[in-house]
Length: 121
Image (cartoon, rainbow, N blue to C red; front, side, top):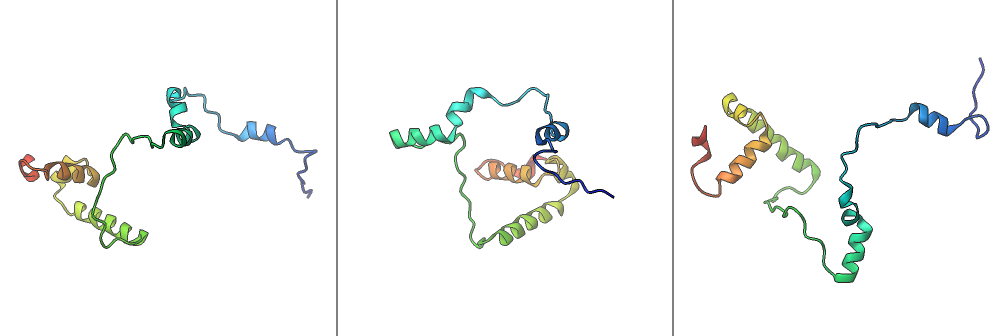
């Protein structure tokens, strides 16, 4: 049994990379017109000149995180919310495509006033 020892003289890394690499021939979905404004170097340069940070496209959301101090406790809260959603009636879960996130977004929208959410089924 012979052992193959790779050296720079008997192993072409470029050839192996071409043979085993991933070739993406699909058209790119990247929108190149945003390249300059999303480049971190341009953002920092603009900040250094003007002192203004670009405004975000979505505003930050604030929530009550009292009692959540670490990753494990945050995961426990998420797991508990998911379990509570799964205990709901199947028709209600189906209304939200079995997605706790859709349910929470709907509840958050309705909590601002107006008709109670449970009357909308």
